[in-house]
Image (cartoon, rainbow over all chains, first blue to last red; front, side, top):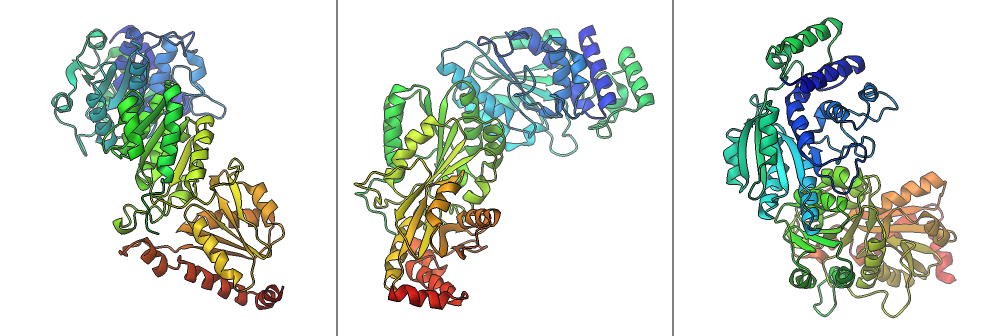
Length: 260
Length: 329
């Protein structure tokens, strides 16, 4: 784990403990993906609405705390501000609001929505003959929603080669409705689909930079709760739970020792 | 009501006028969920970068409209009315309304327009459901002239909007006279004893009911509510001020529909004018044979509405006396 991603995870733990809110394991599975995205795309944290920026959408909005800590790392705002997470008067809700948080392009929360909006943005940019790109991070659990596949069909049919889907393959729906063989699935929908280690920032950046024919899908194999054994081994118990003082120290120690 | 091929429908009147705007404003986009219309063909042929069909994927259509709106487009979505309202309710709520995007949703087949198609294609709950979405404006034109006027209103307005069109070729009420639709409400016929407040195709029914009640000596006016949300409250009060009886008539469930809105306004404003709401009860309709058959069976045809009004008036305290007074006047 690179130092920046470890520090982002520390912040997620600190803020979750302080606020008593947050979905920690899902945030931990997307840290490298979001970090890789913001290292790769064109964006300007000092001017979040810069006309030349690429668009990044977190469709699985419950990983908002992870997104906030990544955006803070890249300078969109001070991470201290995020400590108000979920509190009265805060801009930082448990699902991201585009009108409040700089860098949040689409308000999300209900699963299977961000990807559809992203398809529309990619089409809108194509019509403007712009070379800007749209990237949408979706979850494998989110892909239980039928709308995800409507969006993939339409994006593929429109041949949106400026559209990238990052598929967080953390196997969170093994218990219920798994999405087996996601690479082949997306390929069968007409996408240019590849697989990478979702915790390897360099591999992610290479995949993000790679030219694709048509809609690009990056299946990122991840571990829910990556970085802390306690989280990774008990993802259901920790799905939406904040640590107490003793638990917090244990998780911080595990993170430092990188036990997963 | 049978459709007459010589009358241009309110949908086609809308698309024809929108086409003229789209030719000069390249940011006007139409997305259809695999629904065609004669008036849409020219969009496909001459404005291919402004006309998209997503397939039978209404949820994606609404999400995509939101994404295109973010890129500066004025997007009109189009589908059969139930599939652009209840089927995509969460997309309307979150993708359109919560982000307050300039999207105009066009639904064809309001009420029982798709008569023999059954509850899947009937749209008699859309007003109550769509009006619950914060920021969503709702229009329901009664003829093609109103529909044509809604093109300019919808184009100039950056709010989320829903326009429910009838499917049939309905005669024009407003031909040959200047009508301002911007207040959202039109006094279609002046009244002295009663006003029937109606919307869409029921405005036509209300005029016929008014003709019938004239035989009882009643001067019954008709108010056409073409903008259901935000409801033109001030105008309604101005028109209803002097009449002692108010009836609402809608081809829609009574739960939360036009009559429900008027009742809410009366209660909130302390208005005590007797109010009769006529519409559909809490039921699905599996009756075939046509729209007029449905109206007759469920009390929305002209004789049934007339009878309901007469019974209601005579059962109210003083109602009979009033009717007699009105008759001799």
